[in-house]
Amino acid sequence: MVKVNRSADEQLVNQILHDRYHIQWLLGRKPGRRTFMAIDIDDQLPIVIKFMLFSPDFTWDDLKLFEREAETLKALNHPAIPKYLDFFEVETALGKGFALVQSYIEARSLQEWVQAGCTFSEDELKAIATELLTILDYLHNRQPPVIHRDIKPSNVLLKNRSGNSPGQVYLVDFGSVQTVAHGGTVTVVGTYGYMPPEQFGGRSLPASDLYGVGATLIYLATGQHPADLPQKDLHVEFKQLTTLSQSFTDWIEWLTDPSLAKRPTSTQDALQQLLKPRQQRKAQLATQSILLGTRPLYSYISLKATQTTLELKVPSNQIQYIFPGMYSSCMWGCLLPIVMTFFLMAVIQFWVIPVVVSYLIGCRIYFSGLSRTKPGHIFSTAISSNNANGNRLRCADVTFHRDSGSVVSTLSLIQNSRSVNIFQGKLKGISAGLETVPRYRLNLSFQDASDTILVTGKRQEIQWLCDELSEWTGIQAQHWEAPSA
Image (tube, rainbow, N blue to C red; front, side, top):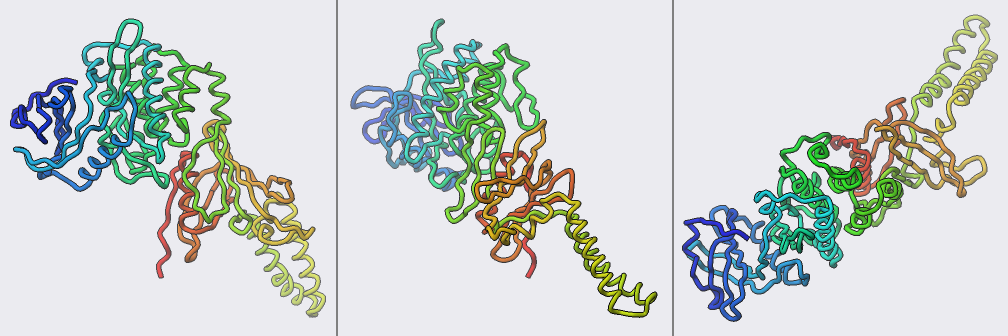
C-alpha cells in the first residue's frame, strides 16, 4: 500500500485510538471515509484502520455498508483476505464515527504494478485469475453467499512477484460487500468499467463478481481502463490490443458478457473451463445449465436454460396461441350464410331452401378454411378443452434456440408423453402487463407472421418469466400500463 499525503487529515497522525492503536499515516480517502496505517501497541504489529465519519455528505447507506463490511470480515477466515481485529465508535478531530481495524497486508495492488510499468504474460494472467477465482469460490460458497461487488485492480494485491511467478494474490476492501438472501440485492455500488450491467440496476449475483475478474484481466492485458476501450453491444473490444491466445480471449469474453445468463454460473465453472481446449470448452458451454432467478413458489411454469437453448413449460390453462386465419375463417363462416340467404330469397322467393343451402355452404367454407391452415391454428381453443379421445391437453412446451443472430421459438403440445409441434417462428418482441385483476399476461410476437403466444399468471410469476426471457434472448421487454378503472 502507498502512503497518501492529505494535509487536512494529518491531525490524526500520531494519535492513539482506543488506548491501543497508534496512527502512522494516511493510506486513502473517500467521501466520509479515511484509511490509515497504524501500529497495534499491544503486539507491535502493523494494522489498517478504516474510519466512517458523520460528515456533511454522510448517508445512512454509508453506515449500513460499513457495518456490513465489519460483520462480513468478522465471519471470514481466509489467508488471502484481511482479518477482522476490532470495531468501535470514535470521536476524532475530523468528527464522530466508527472505526474498523483489520490486519495489514504488505503488498502492492495490481493497479500499482501496471502504473509502475509492469506487464503480465498470459501464463501469469491465468495464474492470477486462478488465485482470484479460488478466493471468490470461498466467498460465494458461504451461507449465505458473500458477493464482493467491487472486484478491480486496486482491490487485488500482489505480493512476492518474481520472474517465475506472479506472486501471492489477496483480495481487499470489502466496503461494497453484500450477502445474498432471496436472489439479489438492491443497493447500487461498484466501480464503472468493472461492474456488470445488472449491478447498475441494483442486482448482484456471484456471476457479477466474475465480470469484475474478467474486466481486471482486460486492464492487466491492455494497460487501459475497460471503460476507455471501444464497445459493441456492451461487449468490451480488447482483443486487438493483446497477443493473448484465442482460447484465453474467449474465456475472458465469457466472463465479461453483458448478459448475466451467458456468463459462468459459478467460480467452479470458470475455473474448470480456464485450461480446457477451446473446442471442448465451446461444446460443453452449449449444454451447460444456466442459473436463473428464483421462480415464485406457487408457479407451475418452469424454465430450463443453457447457452444455446431455453425451454419453457406452461400448464394448458395458462397459455394460448393466437393466429390471424382463425378469426377470418370464423367471421366468414358466420356472415356468409346470412348474405347468401338474402340473395337466394330474392331469386327463389322461398326461405327454407335458401337458408339450408346457404348454411351448408358457409359451414363448408369455414371448415375448409381451417383445413388449409396448419394444425396449430386450432390451438387457442383446443388447449383448454378435451381432445377427440377425451384426454386433457396438460402442458405446452415453448423452446427457444439461437440461430444466426436470431431467436427461433417452437411451440409444442405435450400430451400422454408425446410432443406435437404446432408453430415455429423467429421471436420479435416480448411484452407484459395487467390483463384483468389479478391476472397478468405475457405476449410473445414473431417476425414472419402475426402469430402470438400468450401466457397468463399472477404478477410475480409473469414478471419473473418476462425478466428471464428478456435476459436470455437479449430482446428488450415492453411493459404496458394497467387499464384505467
